[in-house]
Amino acid sequence: MFRKWCALALCAMLCALPLARAEAIPSEQYFARAKDALVLLAQGREQEALDKLAFVYALPDGSDDQFLQFVKDYLPDLNEKTVQREVAVCYWEAVSEQWLLAIPISEPRNDDVIALVLLSSDFETFTGYAALSWAEVNEGTATSEWVWWNVEYDAGTRALYAD
Image (spheres, one colour):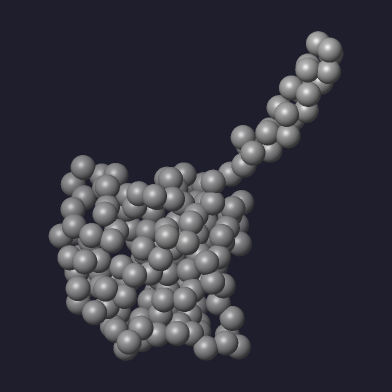
């Protein structure tokens, strides 16, 4: 009887092992928060965008005002007529040891389209930001060990734009 219980317990532990080692994956809400914030920024609704992102800045001098200035400086083509909210990708960047969530600000028809990149260590909290070209994002995904596309860009399909 003892052997049966030990065998059963061993089987249960072996079955649970893959679950314990499973990697966390970004949720739909994680992607949606970022995409919604991008649309809000394009509409000029800055405070609502900041509320969606709820930054916890990694640098002591980080602030929401600095982020809004960054948007003006590095995403000058962001506007509500061309902002897209379908395509997004999250990938691990080994150098910074951060997850990068990249959303092109318009349909990524070419490598020059700029993407808003949000940094996170846990798929919940955004700790930083950057602007990268779509070519740089694709290069990052090609060399990353872990990549999750929310919606992968396909030039043969139409991208949806916000109203």
